[in-house]
Image (tube, rainbow, N blue to C red; front, side, top):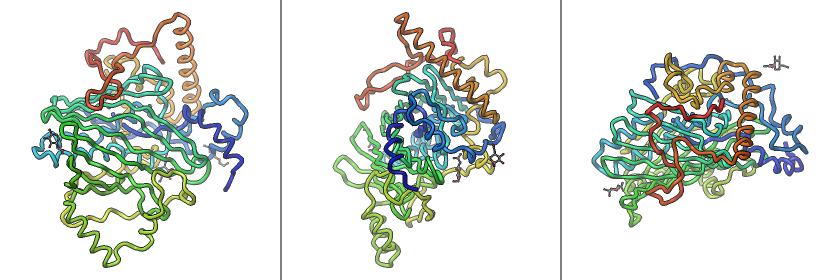
Length: 459
Ligand SMILES: *[C@@H]1O[C@H](CO)[C@@H](O)[C@H](O)[C@H]1NC(C)=O
Ligand SMILES: *[C@@H]1O[C@H](CO)[C@@H](O)[C@H](O)[C@H]1NC(C)=O
Ligand SMILES: *[C@@H]1O[C@H](CO)[C@@H](O)[C@H](O)[C@H]1NC(C)=O
């Protein structure tokens, strides 16, 4: 269905969508996960709601006043989505234990890919965090704890800081999601740098996450693609791992593929890294890889179609003609003989489809253990009434509560501007990332001392 004139109008909705529609990028959480791994209720079907029917009514209205219906959300705050980065923390522990620097780099590369794997088939929009909202996650079984805070409202910035309980790593970053609405799809760029420090090795790695595109937001089947180049830099030596998240291309042949290599500062290829972010990642010797590719071509293992796709697919294109149908070709990764498996995705639980396509990890993020209420900061998103209501399947309460919280936030901002009071963040400070020398939000410490008397009442 073509709607070129509507598309022009829709172009004006970008600003509104930026604040209202989905944000996908990173994920984090705290206490041993002995949880139930399920949600209190199944999700409400979105079939009776069309984004278009809502946008249609918005034409000519003041866009900032329009909120997307909660039914398009998932019952998690974006801060909780960020904590999902930590799902495969075992990879960081593994990297810490490796003495060979190339082996460390390839496991770090697998971690960077695994961190965005939870986005697979997750088309629900997380709730926008309120200014000052926090989320903590302590996982003693996995040996880490994490704290995140919404440090800015306009533009929205979420900062997180995770640290190993044994002091062997620190993983931190701040994300400012930038959204572009293309008429049929929404592209989200998770602006911000991830920094992983392996303390015992005195190493720091930094990278930025790939772009994410949700197709068919107006009509058709929603599906997700991630693409762009992710460069993981070892700041001690200048060695790099370059990973290319491929756009799906015209026949879907490249869908979800990730390919790249580790190189030293003279650009000599040391390892080839390949796989899919939805499935698994392998590492192999570059010579072995090249030889395999050549022999595959000779025996016709690569079809003409594939070549054509590779030649024509424009880089970083979210909205190319004909790319909006769900790609049908979904082959599994072919292992090149001699490769080492770096990471494999965990299967989703059987009830995932009725629960926002959550992973087991995501299912536990709202858990509030008995006694935890007294320990947590009052700003923790587990206390958000709108998210709670949605999780229990009460969309109407979720809607009214979300409106109430946003109104309360606006009133607080007005109040502050009247009394020339400045907003100040609780746990993070704007500063310079020592590794990239770029501006970043850095944890100032103290959250886990559990003295929260200065926290504002934002709910
Ligand atoms: C959706 O619409 C169908 C058909 O009109 C109706 O039977 C069903 O109850 C509706 N579901 C919800 C959740 O409103
Ligand atoms: C990273 O930096 C460290 C410290 O200088 C160095 O020993 C190591 O070779 C580097 N690792 C990689 C994979 O480049
Ligand atoms: C879950 O995944 C299925 C299969 O891809 C998809 O049709 C559905 O829209 C997804 N649901 C959500 C809430 O993203």
